[in-house]
Amino acid sequence: MKTFQSLSEIQSEISSGKLTVSSLVDYHLKQIKEKNGRLNAFLSVYEDEAINQSKIVDSKIQNKSAGKLAGMVIGIKDVFAYKDHPLQCASTILEGFESQYTATCIQRLIDEDAIIIGRQNCDEFAMGSSNENSAFGPTRNPMDESRVPGGSSGGSAAAVAADMCQVSIGSDTGGSVRQPAAFCGLVGLKPTYSRISRYGLAAYASSFDTVGIISKSTEDAALVLEVMAGKDDFDSTVSQMEVPQFSSFELNKKYKIGFIAETLLHDGLDEEIKSAVREVIEHLKSNSHTVEEVHFSHLDYVLPTYYVLTAAEASSNLSRYDGVRYGIRAKSDDLEEMYKVTRSEGFGEEVKRRIMTGTFVLSASYYDAYYTKAQKVRRLIRDETEKLFEEFDILISPTTPSTAFKIGDIKNDPIQMYLEDLFTVQANVVGIPAISIPWGVDNQGLPMGVQLMSKSFNELELLDISNQIITFKDQNR
Image (cartoon, rainbow, N blue to C red; front, side, top):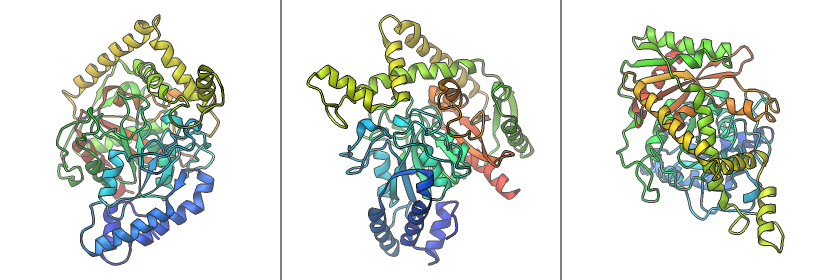
């Protein structure tokens, strides 16, 4: 079976009688069986459910009552609740736990006849940039199996790149959808904070966490966003704004775009990625878009601000995993000792590092010096970013400073690992939408990504310009 780039291609073949949803599901299951042993992208495969649901969707298609996602096979990161299915956040501490309800975003996909094919590997509790922090072992990049697929949604990106599913749903707290998308040659969309309900998403850092989408096309990303977005009675923080028809792509307008000079001049940026971004800039200029250099003076403060605040929120959020209510429990007659041993044995090293860091910055002696100051800097970063959007529609930068690195190369160097998020965390600190789109490969054949950002709730224009760039690239191959 051929590889489909979008749902519209799939639905066209279904309409012509060349394809059925059942045969498509069989194909993806075959891909999983052939590749997952090497890639370690899926932790659970819902084979029987997917096959049964595919027959129901085929029947709905025949009766002309199918939803708008009929024919889309989706994998979900192991941080989303899916009733009566495992939810482990790739952590030992939740071993054996099954969710008692379904996340709003996942339910909305199911309601439109998408088929959930399985649960995907990730960094433990979404904390990581390489998918090496999983209790189930690392996921491998389908482009080069000696390399990481990115993180924390590494299994989600690897699954789409290896054609084990059409789309994956991940979470993006500091780049966890965009960075893996860049490493695997895919589209990774992080919507505006609160655009999609977080109900049913296991919390890491609640003021940063965003439901994200990894796909092969902007078309599929737009359609899935359209389905998942919108108000939700189960989430008091979700936006009440009406959801535009993102998938229409009717704008096709010319934009004023700023490229962030500090990102292209950064010492850690790979020269080939810098060239790729400059290629995109030249393409935009040649297609009558206005592109100008802009400066962002707080770039060096974004990463430390992000890690202080997310560690603090993680310390609070992960205090619920104590061995009493769910997951594993250490054997001890002493309650305090049981807490300590359960958490020591249940959490991995990176999660423990962030919990301890967060507890430290929230402690009475250091609260003002770290947490309060980081909140003030977050406001400065937001103000400077929003000021840029008073003049520009879109900001452009690299997605990552490098292409996919080898498994094990920087796993034991937390600072180097954190620097992988250098260009992506700004969107999460501010809460704006951002997308990574693929733009060629380097001299080792590894994919490179370019990031675009826009002001809050402006996904319509963000997807439009992304679609223009990808369409141009495809037409000029």
